[in-house]
Length: 150
Image (cartoon, rainbow, N blue to C red; front, top):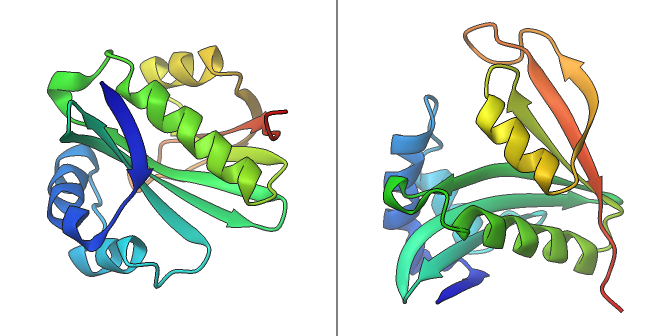
């Protein structure tokens, strides 16, 4: 069973380890701890568990009517199993509860798999940020509306 919940300080080690594996410029353990303990008022860390075991996380920031999905990472052995979809659905619901009207994210222009995943979840291209990534790759800015369920 897959379940998504708010991260706690007990999740910092797992999040930090996956952060280092998933991203070329990983966030520090200190920053992850601040997000998990609620010290960053606009930022929420969400953890997904598969059968009670850590499977991945997402980071969502909400400011006014915009929410930004800053990170999504899933353990390699659990990719393409619905775990990322569960995280994305939870991030969208969180954004709606916080009053956001849309969920934004950046994705590498050369990451076709991620672009396809986000398109399946209703994201469309809003713009481009040339040279956004450290290696000079362009970022695509994607957006999807969020609404509260009736």
